[in-house]
Image (cartoon, rainbow, N blue to C red; front, side, top):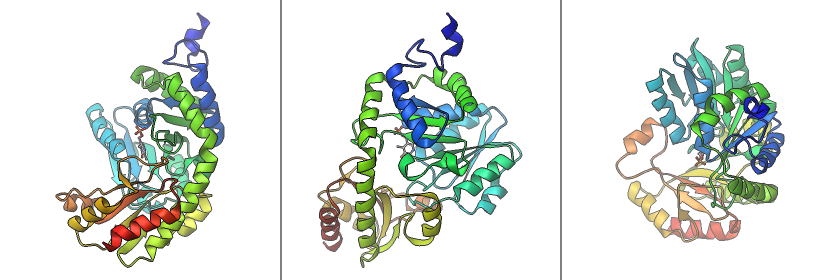
Length: 343
Ligand SMILES: *Cc1c(COP(=O)(O)O)cnc(C)c1O
């Protein structure tokens, strides 16, 4: 019966720990240079365990940068439990400092951020959080641990969806949290075991399979993503490419990341909503899809034709399209984009 008090390190019951899942957790912890990792049934399982495990009534959580939609929705939901939140789109560390409150317990970063891909000065913001007695967390799904190691930059908690690049084939749902051992135990006992978003051993096996080709896939996503982004940046029907390695974040990018994934956005110059819709429909290789990080290229527009004011309020350009560059080859993808842009 000794195992019952030690469920975070003993195989008592699979909702707690399981040897197949644990094998993957050890790999992800090592990749992220963290002491411990817990895997989850989805990325949102991981996000919710961090927020529920570490925040109590009266606390404040600060989301920095454009943040994954359901993460913010969960932040809003936490108001029902007495937890306040803010999201700040200004990426300047001074603005982050100004947005912190005495009761801020967690500073949640996404770098680069969702949809607009601005990079944050991760080390400075993590330091700021620590100096104010708050924990810092970073959703590292975009870069993967191969291209960015937030813990080495001073971040306390790294969160992943493994449904995207880690899995890599758009055929599984999984998530992960990496941290030091004591934060891990808080999240494990106060949230993970109780919320129950445990990764099944069969899916853990798929994540493990994905990790084996992650380095090779990421090299291709890096090269082809940059080739497509650079091509679009010079296209007359493209107003601006939003990519952390190109443009004003290039220096920050070079300091913090050793490569880039294949997900970025472009602000098109094709007319308004109708022009964007025509462009998306004319693409042949890019399928319409909300996910990313798989073998097949995907495109999505946040514009539904009736929400332009809401997008502008969130500082998302209404003619933005997000592209996930798959493994079809840059030349073929560029030809597809050119055809759809010129039509
Ligand atoms: C998809 C995604 C998540 C959530 O992951 P799921 O596995 O879909 O639950 C979290 N963060 C980011 C940045 C994502 O893109």
